Image (cartoon, rainbow, N blue to C red; front, side, top):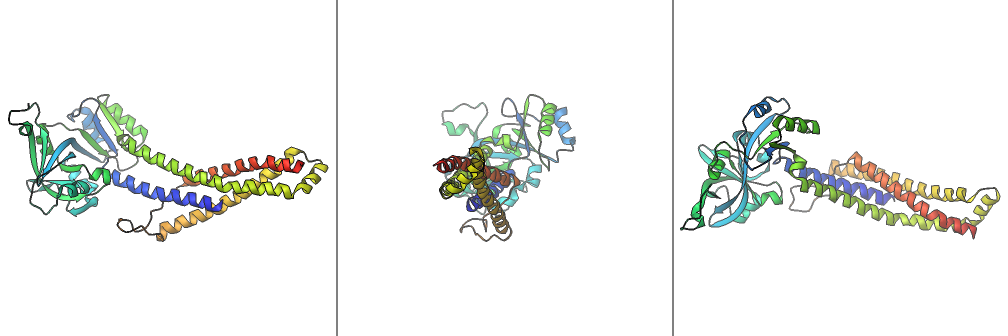
Length: 371
């Protein structure tokens, strides 16, 4: 029971470590709050409601973005990508600079527009910041019809010089291209429109803030927190942790079955003592309760020892990083994050398993005693 409990704490803590790294990486690309149009793809951020956002003390930064699926071409290769046009505020305050693995994060070199490209996409297309070949973004011209010269002539295009390669995670790196907002508008044939506003609060986002901003902007806009922006990802991470917990708890149930066998053997060895207790006036319920408490105390002792061992080992790994990651990862050691909620769930789960096994074992011991 102690080993099973310690394993539960350690594995959940390691999962929390990887989960935190994923969330932190995504948070550098995903804003605290995203404002989008409830209908349509683009909108013009003007009016009293948007002016109030600029003066709202709860909002520390507002960036305009314009996202669209585009066709990339570079050195004779073509790929589909998700282009993200950003304004000067985003360029100056972006955390993507911390994810740059080659080159320097910059979207302007004087008057020359530049692009930051996801690492996986860049490797697939052979893009390097030091190369002189231009990166060209293509998108159908608004209202254009397919001419006789072919569909390619109906595509608008904008050229960029690759400035750097950035890495967030595998899925994002395969499709991400960040470019200046002005060139993105030129490519899409827009003027002042944006596809969203990214709001950074500098602190936690609660439901009251979301509701207040939604009421301020009205029903024509949607106000989304990070969970609502990536619901599939966050739900997947929650379900993965739940699955890990249930699988390890099932292992604890298998381990706890030893208690059932021990109580059964105890009932065989204590037949005379049980007869003595009956002779002294103890009823079957009292004798059954003795076995239940005996089995549960065994599991609780294992639980206490496992909690102490698991917390100690997790702290040592977190503090000193004894168990190293395999080669090729940017982490030196397995990340570990202890959470109080995990300790509570492990305590409740193992205690419940111990109580259940003890209840199942007690009638057998009682029956043996009768024999």
